[in-house]
Image (cartoon, rainbow, N blue to C red; front, side):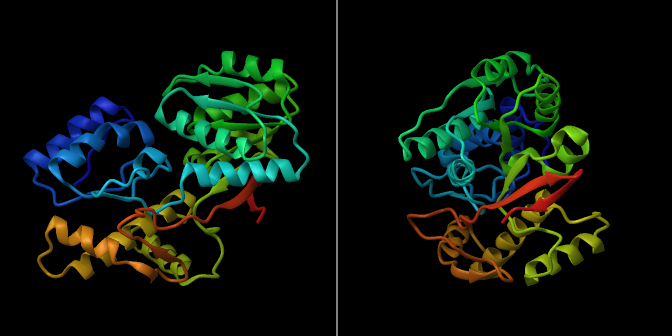
Length: 304
């Protein structure tokens, strides 16, 4: 069963209540976005329905640990720390944040603040825009005024592509980076030549590689379903699905919700085909690895 919330919190609530109350779902899987996942969190708690593998790194789903919520991917704090460390290593003395003005943007903004505070630094400037719009000019003006060495951008691919193009046209020299939620393949396609040099943190290994069995497994599964090329987003979806299937297998032939929770918490050091993940009663985030990529010549390449 699939519900489309249009990346809007109110609709996420409606679709979730429909699935739980009318369609009697056993569990919720793969919700997309911080504001939408945050919106259904009270429902998940009250109705005691497991929510597994949300496509967000928000700390609100991680700390404090919610019994029903299990995160597969690394957090936005993990991604922000990796990006700030990369900027500092490249000589950056000032870091600004251009962000979507909602729970998603606030989550990455907070992670960037934490990473800078560890280094006795503060955010040099902030600029924001509204979700589901391309209204980036005010936020861009803040960046142009501050002239930071680096900018962490937080948003979906369309507004960030617009920001990058206009920033380069306006002569902004800052290093630019964003986090995994952006949708790497769509950003690369949309931004064009202006995207060269933009760094993107990822929470899955490089999908074009064949180093790990899970890369090959997911590529084959996608091909079998007619799903096209394996990229960062659908690779994460495949990993999340495999975690869910493994937990269901461990929960037995007739699993109950409490049994699924117990099965997930028992997955410690579980090998998912070259990716080892661990849950525990006090840790509902399975993976914490972050990988850096960069747009080079209109394609995405590994940095490390």
